[in-house]
View 1: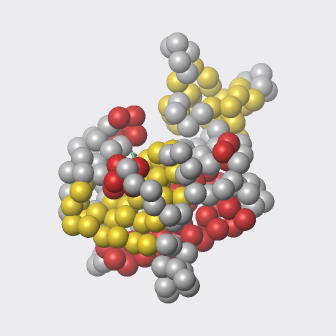
View 2: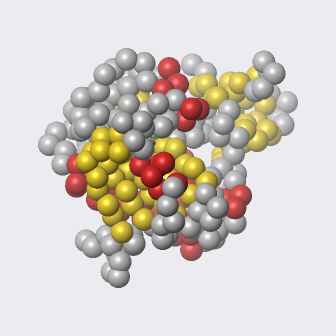
Length: 251
Ligand code: BTN
């Protein structure tokens, strides 16, 4: 399938051997909607919470610039959408996967982290950065204290990075297009339902670290149209938890 316009969904795809960070590169230029940059390695890959994303050759490091034209409050769903795309790509590779809200992709029976998503907002749009561990990884504690793993480490074989990138771009388009057509509504576009299918957190009892050493204990119910997690406490009150807060699953 053609990925690039006029017949495909993306306006351009560039692959470079090495760069500091594909996110930083796309943040620094004026790119058209749905521009893609892929690097074979990154020398200063950025993770969430100011952490580094270790990016040796053999992994997939991709950023996509979107000008989605949906109400700004709904834009956080783009990062959740990336999690859905990653989970489906892991499924295609025959690797068991689950999403820990907001968008850690956990792989294999031990549920170790295999991918992460970092979105950066620009003036008109969003740079959506996706890092997927494919080849061997150093299984030390990865970002957020979760051990790292990769598709190959979890038993996938013969993964060609070009094919993997193509699958991921097709999956992103499959969910982004209806979401955009529904003006960013995750319910009308079926995205919320698909996210729920893959998500470990929804329906579970959770403990949320709030600022000021407080915590909230309750049940994770659903995600709002702005991407916040709705947690119902023991008294039956609903609380909106933003994606920046740390949520623990209770055993
Ligand atoms: C996380 O901490 O979970 C998010 C990691 C995001 C890494 C990707 S790799 C491609 C893009 N470029 C970067 O510098 N970071 C993102």
